[in-house]
Length: 286
Length: 177
Image (cartoon, rainbow over all chains, first blue to last red; front, side, top):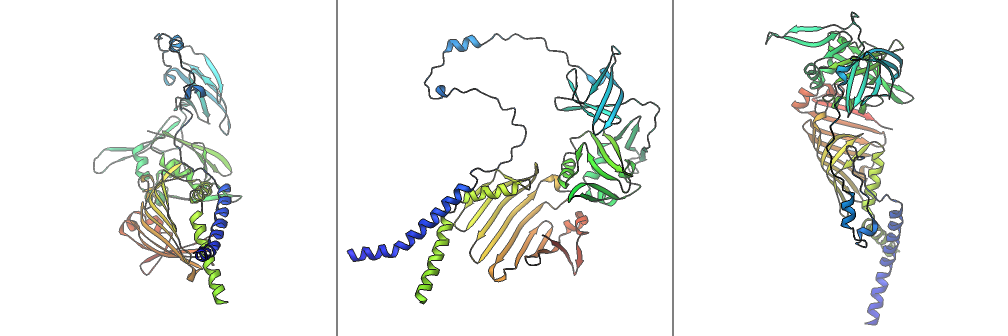
């Protein structure tokens, strides 16, 4: 019996040694490996309510006194709500001194008092923040909404064409691109006809990446169909598209993001380089 | 002498077996996630299942640079000593991409075995049709032959324009570094 157990031990001994070595190796590997998983968290987590926890409370070591709580409760007095300022009706954009690169100063005039204010990017006016300054417009933001103001340039004509044509089936006028004063409006329906038919896009425009130091720095327009919306919107062959809605096109993903969110945006601002000069093309989506 | 050699081989195989047994597989998966997150790819909401030689990721949402890109029913990685298999089932792109790419890969299998160690073989099917191809590790190239479905021919002509059409099959070659 004693001999048998010795034999078994002798047989098992190398296996135990091998198992121990591999266990030790795996343990060392475990020390160097990450311990947590990566999850995608959408949205803003900064709005999670902060609650102050008392360590002693958590274990029931201190009883919370009801009286103390009662003291802290204040009577709710309804305050008259502050009337909302309707910025769209109340001000006009008088002048823009743009330095390019989203920098500069604007002058606005309050319609009611004719009082003028000079604002730079980031300045607040009433409850609105000036978030963008471009050559022909400025954008104020409040509560995640953008309010776009165009400079009033009466009588000034832009180069864009108005495309109106009769729909043969319905005999109705189809308005596609509308130019009024300084704003160019594209109907969402017409835009969607391109968004939902990617073949239509590639039939009318061809682009390729422009690489600088091995990275994408923009997209060059290599072909534009002169009858397409891209030509009407002002794009020309050899234009280099650098930014769309102030986002640099440094990878395909940025372009995809804009494409995916096209339903949610109300304006387009395209920064291009034409003949070595920066130009901006701006459109509203109606 | 032969007995000693067999013993060594047997102990070696046992060593490999125990390594597979004790490997901190969860943490290896976290490392993989960390590596792919550098390319802005995040797998989320998935369940991970480790078996002795197989590894499964199920019901994963795939995000690319903050965009919800696709949903994947199952990814299986089979690691056998002589043969490795990488298999994806029901990989579905989100609707936002349906204008650009065919949205469903029903099955994608990449097989690699030691007998043909310079090549890995690809087989795939989905609403785009079927793909047969190979990854040449020596030439560092991927060659794919696509038998395009009618949907692919009608709705994704643009992609087919990037491929060479020969004998009823669309051929695509990609070289990697």
